[in-house]
Image 1 (cartoon, rainbow, N blue to C red):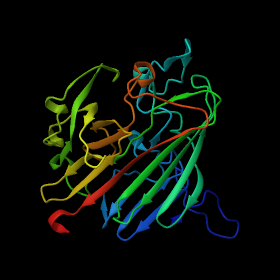
Image 2: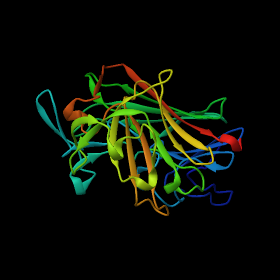
Image 3: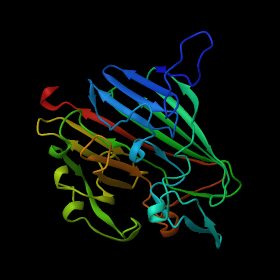
Image 4: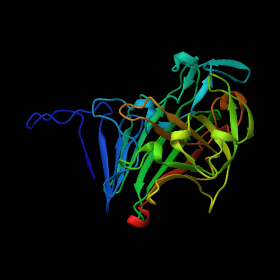
Length: 319
């Protein structure tokens, strides 16, 4: 593993500066992953030189929340408000245009190094008690290149408070297949149910997948303009798998474990330098879970909860 330091050495040249802090490079065989100090984010993942996630420049923070990890909630909290023991809690509004609290409390946090090796890195950040969320928790994220050269991510939330704390865990990776035209790719998601959201992207009901939200047989990205949470996931050996594939047989898949009962699919037409970008976000609960209770979990004092997800690559006939 190699990593870039924060500060200039008095005896050496000025090191590379990154807007996302220290960069951790994981290498194994033909696999390369880059993890950031900021938000314990996945900045890039390559296999055999093929870029499998969207990435960004050294001087940028993650556009569209690219690759960041999400705690203690994923997605949105409506108006930034929820109730704890009958008392209204007010979170900071971070999605001003829709008046929501978005993507948790660690999006702008620096994660400290816990341990590292050539194949893995573990980072951790503290969620301190604050207005709108009066709990003390720690979020640890491990990235690992396994012996199949796939990327495995483990996110663990531990409660150091004296009271149970509500939470949703998630992540925000964007998938791609190297230089393949994104419009030509097909996304397959084995999910039977969609959440029907209002114009502020707050779910109001559930319904069977249909039209643009039915990915069970695959949909061309060129046809899609969606920002939707899906559930009712089909699993094999406990894993739900979502695949972006090309006509030449290559594919990249994101899988998520049984703790992640939801996946959010977002096709962006505003990603810098890309005509479209496809976020496939594993989550334990959907937007506004703090109010709806859907997918919401409570972590008892002294307990921890872990989710796993990962990214795999297949070269198809080219391999």
